[in-house]
Image (spheres, rainbow, N blue to C red):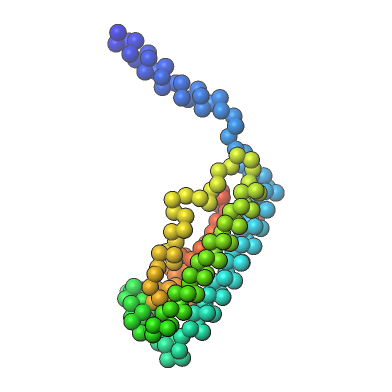
Length: 188
């Protein structure tokens, strides 16, 4: 009886392996031409995303009074040279300094950017999916979708720092920045 349990366990453990071996409908990897098309599409959309970001940046800059613009520049400069920069504290200081009208314009500029960015990403997702080999999963969907740090920010001070600071740490949260095509680096 003991041997029959082991034989049954062995047989049951081999069945899933055999079933997987018989599945030959796995999606093929993108061909060189497809990889180039995917890369070109991603570059085009990254440029469009960058244009949206520059538009938002310009709107945010124009929302600030000259005195507040100098204060923002000083805060960003202080963060750049601080031995232990604290972006959260800087964002809180900026938020407290801004007038209600400035905060409203910053939030409106970011909301417009976020809506346009979502629309652009949906368009990109559709184009990329059409360029993928048949049967490839939608690689750009997942539980993390729409959860970039810039989208989680809700206070004008943090949005201001993220939109204006030149440090790459701030750029990482914006959609479209640092995007990689499926399978890693773009084709050469």
